[in-house]
Length: 135
Image 1 (tube, rainbow, N blue to C red):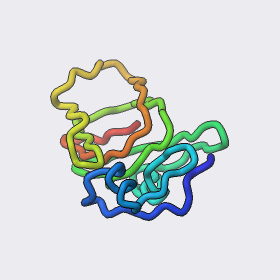
Image 2 (image 1 turned 90 degrees about the vertical axis):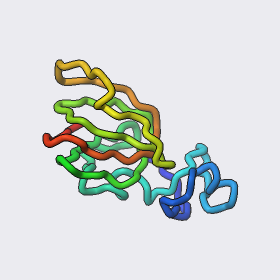
Image 3 (image 1 turned 45 degrees about the horizontal axis):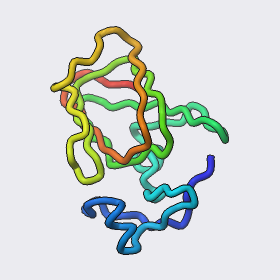
């Protein structure tokens, strides 16, 4: 898969990639992706993401978050399908640490597997329950 190269890694304290791009800390790739390769899920959070299959058309990841874990900030560059085989309470935050999803406030369907769609994003995820989550 084609990825941006030559981008500078950002300290997580910066408020957003848009601000970083405006002050010249991030190089936008030809396709407009604003985040550096160092924030790719497999690079930034390898203990939580592994590549099952990758070619020029698709990338399949196994993502696991153990009870009490917080996954470092990372990106998913392409839109994706989440095939959830088990789920536990979690909080997903964006690059500015604003809450995107707090599963405790949602009513997820009980049947598994659960299939969800996601656009590209930068986020972190914290487990708030005692069982393992796997997507």
